[in-house]
Length: 361
Ligand code: NPQ
Ligand code: MG
Image (cartoon, rainbow, N blue to C red):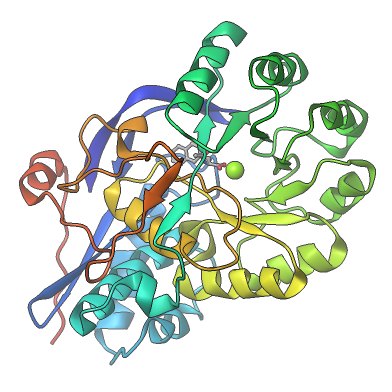
């Protein structure tokens, strides 16, 4: 468990964050180590999981189970954990570490291992709720100047129409989207329809975290495409959402869906349905960010992801070469073995607040 302080607080409709305690998973076999990251927060605000629920299910259920098995692929990890309900972020930590370890031991990058086709991916930035509109507009222009291809604004009741209107004026033609993180209900449909005037790329998760049906009703009256985030916790939910018309796009977060196995499944369900996907973000450190880049190299990731430069969140990242956004708004997908980045072990040790070791046979 490491502790990292954000370079500036990040505020969404559910709360304000200024630091992250990040549980990391290091999985070792035959002298090779693989790394994964768990994207749970200290309170169950984005989803029901927390850092402590992840610690509990890993230590008391998942790790003891895996240590008794022979695991040949990441699909074996997913299959072993399938009988345990929920706890996707905790499961993903294990799948990610296993994927890194497996790819490193074969000497291939995760991108190669999963069939990624791009060596650079287009990226956007997610901007939090600010003190006032001028401060947000300043953030928007600063990030556009850095090359980001898409700006996403966090919205909530009382911080929506005027804010989007002001940003649209300052940024008239660029790709712009909004993310409500479940802050509205279907009773707000008439209010949300007024967002249609701003030519938004999408509105992300306006309604409840576990809803598909009200989103279907809302999408019927909105011209702006709905993108589901919180509601899509596995490939079956993605298939249901697309069949119902609850959304037109989906953001894939490896942590939210339990790892690569479901993430790849959602990618394929969406591709078969002609729905684009993009890679979401959870304020990852360099380890989670490297996994996101590998995932986003797949062909149906056709919209810019929430994969910012390391410096957008961290003064110092846990990898020796922080991720940077090029002037064309892309980030390179690492091509070394596994996640393809080198961990800054000294820095990691310095910010480690807790550690638990589990050993097999
Ligand atoms: C989203 N992420 O797309 C999330 C929400 C989010 C980049 O907008 C701590 C841990 C704080 C995870 C704040 C972005 C968080 C978090 C927001 C995830 O909905
Ligand atoms: Mg979101």
